[in-house]
Length: 198
Image (cartoon, rainbow, N blue to C red; front, side):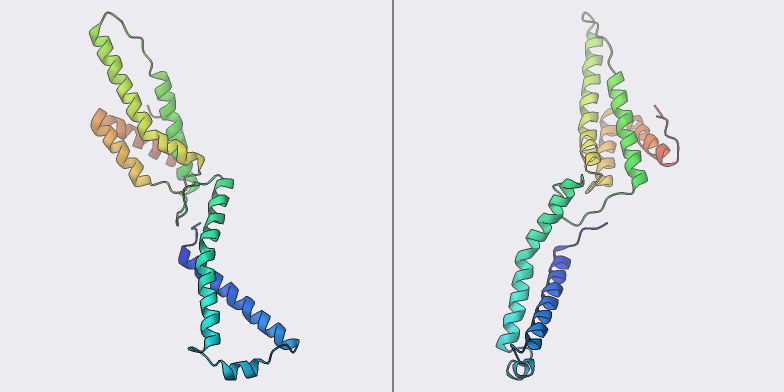
């Protein structure tokens, strides 16, 4: 569900203020406190002081209330587990894709955890291999730490294209097979194969 834009919030507030003002005027007229017929003769339409005053009041109220309304959305996002930094007009990805991303994240974390191998201290090749493995683990963690964070926020504001671009760059640095493998795990989960393809 999209969050309303600032313009939509302002328009809604203007509508609420207009309705409230008209209800107040009707109530005052009903009690005999004002005569709207006389007021309409004196303050007729656009350009009158009365009309301009009321219009300005609605516009200023809407303008200055919009940040407060936006803050309510911000606090609601935090309460509901959404992205607290997302004050814009964002959507969440569908549930099935959220599950697929969480599955991919879990699979990658399991792979990182099981990737430890002993280093033979007297063998330079072993040291080089271990350093290479550590660089790969670091780069994988860099790619997936944002996914983990957005997972906590139910993927509100998550940019899928950017994530897969980062995965492609990881593949360029460490071998295309890695990016293909991650894509296969994700697509496999979407198509109903939840077992890790590693």
